[in-house]
Every structure is written in C-alpha cells, then in structure tokens.
Image (cartoon, rainbow over all chains, first blue to last red):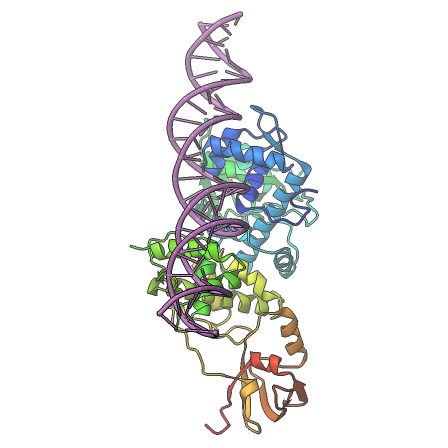
Length: 229
Length: 229
DNA sequence: TCCAGAGTTTAGTGTTGCCTAACTCTGTGG
DNA sequence: CCACAGAGTTAGGCAACACTAAACTCTGGA
C-alpha cells in the first residue's frame, strides 16, 4: 500500500516536487540543485524532501545521483499536470482569463480541486487534448501524446509550419507573442534568418514579422498537413 | 499594519478558524469547546490557535471567556464566506453540481481562489445575492443583508410563507428536501401541526407534504409579498 | 593521481499546527 | 460559601517543511 493509492492526500509541497521532477527528468534523474532552483528552495531542503519521498516510494534516489520518479510518482505528477492544464483551459474558455494570466491561478487551484471537478471541467470543454499554450493534456489514465516539435529558431526557410506549443510561462513574453498573433495553431513560414542567432523573418497569413532568436526558441512548431512530410 | 492588510496570506487553518468563529458567535464570544467541536479538533489545539490569532489581532480573547472576532477578523471571515457561497453558486450554475454535493468542493476551493477569480465568477453569475441554499452572499466590501427568517417549525397555520434559506449542509438531508420540492423560493402554507414537536402538514403549489419537526427546523421562511405584513 | 570546487547531505533551528496529559479556573449545587 | 465537575489552559511532543552552517563526496583538470 502506498500513499496515493490509500487515498491519503499528498501535501501541496509533495505535489509540487513531483510535478517539478517530472518536468526536469528527461530520461535522466533530476539533480538536487536543479530541483532546488526550480522550486526556489535551498538544496538542503530538497535533499530532505527527497529522502521523505523516497521512503514513500514516490521517488527512487541514489545519494549524489539525483532523484527519479517511481511509477507511482509519475502517476501523481501526470495527474497534477492534467489538472493544471485543464484548469488553465477552463479559465481561459469560461472565465475571461488570458493565456498570460492563468498560470498562477491554476498553480493554486490544481491542489484544491477534486477529481470530480476536474472531470466536469474537462467535459464542459469537450475533453480538450491541449491547453491554451498548446501543451498536451494527459488523459485521465495518465497517457499523454507528446508531438514531435521543432523550435522556430531551427526551422528551414520556405517551408510552411504550424505553431503547436508555446513553451513559456512568463506573462510578458506571452503578451508579446499574443500581440503579434503568434499562438498555437497559426501557420508560419520562415522567410529569412540572420546568422549568429540573429532575428528571424517569418510570414504569417496576413503579415510578416521579425522576431528575436530568444523568442523563436519558445515557439515549438510542426509541419502542417499540407506541407511535404 | 496587520497581517491581512499587509497582503500576507493567512493559512488555511486560520481562515477556517475565523469562519467558524464568525458562524458560532451570535453577539457573544465563541467558546473554545464549541470551536473545537465545530472544527473537530482538541480544545487544547484551539486554545493554542486562539492565542496566536489574538496576537495577530484577528481575535479578542479573555482567558476562560471565549473568543470574539476583531474588526479585521470579521473582515477575513466575511471574505471567506463570500468566496464559499459564490463558489457554490458557480459550481451549481455551471458545472453540474447539486446543492447537496457542493459544500466540500467549495470548502477546499475557497482557500485557493484569487480575488480576481471570485469576482469573475460573481460577474458570470450576474452578482447573485444568495447561494443555492438561500444563504446571503456578503458583498465585496463585507456588507451582508441578513433577512429575518422564521423556522418552518414555528410558522402560524394558514398564512402563506416562502422558504428563504435551508440551514443545513448534510447531503442526505438536502437530498431529502430536494426530493420533496422544498427549496428556497418555494411558497408554502402550514395546514396543521401536531403537538409535542410532531409532524407538520404543509401545502405547496401542487402538493401537500408532512414533514418532521427536525427537518422543519432547517427550513427558514419569511412572509411572501402577497401575505399580510 | 590528487585535489579544488561544485554538488550533496547532515545537523541543528524555527514555525505551524496538531496531539495527550496535567493543571487551573469558573460557576453552581448543596 | 465552598467544593467539585467540567471548561479552558499550559506543558511537552511530534510531523511536515523550510532555513543556515558545516561536513562530506564526487569529478574534472593539472
């Protein structure tokens, strides 16, 4: 018997740790210092929590080797991500939030909503598969389809692509992008690119834009249906 | 400078204490044991919290004499009650909740939502003044109009009244009432009443019902427009 | 291969908020 | 008018989580 299956509610802290470790682990274990930085805590605090979570079988941990989610830990993390993204979607669709302001609200609500409420919101939205930033919403069973995407900064010129996801939370950046019509679903073509990470010129349906490479990094794209496979 | 004005967030516990003490105080201070019973905590824990809240100027407390909200404490309590009732209203109106299931969900959400979200929900509902149970929703400035009501158990026979509020949280009782069409807004007339707290017969628009005095206690009524003042 | 610095863990504290056990106060009945 | 039941408080613990300071371990470069 483990904590989550026993229906014991995990604390907000625990949920945040697991979510963060999920985000940081890309196959490899997450380093203590990485986690500390992401959560704005001291490494010592993280070390302590890692120990507790390892005892609860939510993490696997070898000292000095970083931490990795167990199957159960991953389950919890994906549940939190599902909640977060569905809440963001709901707030944008029904309560007048814009994509640059939903994050903080969802961050708090994700720890408070019941499964029932999450599923009601999902149903009200027609069971969406991605959130306002284009990030995929894990299914209730924990499965998630991660589309292959390429940062706009690495796109070849002259080929049509669609923006799929915007990998950013910073409200200012998000507003900057929204002002320029750069959102998931929008079709773009790189016209030209300057060397040394210089600005990139792209064509949208009705305009041309010049954007910096920093910004272009956050625009994750995939080939459109119509383009060459 | 006090805690709430400084924008420091109060803990969930503190918010619950203040809300409970508001509910229990009817002019008089709330007894430690009353609070303990309401929150399902030991009297010792409550004593400790009362001390801390008194230091924070959220309560006035004379040892062995119970606790009372300060102006600031009342402000916090009313804010929580506003949140709770608006959340309940929103969930019932927009997310398929029924009045017997909303309480627990609202109980958790009220601590997590931002003022922005609460006000968006209020706006989406058209700024309602009462929740699904008929309880008045405090205004954003903390003002609340408490209508004078009389329990159905004490109503005179033969005069038309309207159910205004249902003073109960118990889901079973709420379902029992809903099944019989006994909700806020419904017009009723007491037909007869048996002595010794016996059952009461009431007439509704299209039916007659016999209800126990226990249940009748929770149905809070007021004279209808049309009836004699 | 060794060692310096980066990274990690341990040790010791503080806060919140809960508990039980033991004590103290209050008010009422005899 | 005083003792005693019961309400209220204090004392002492514990668990979760955070911190700083100090000790330890790992690794890469000379």
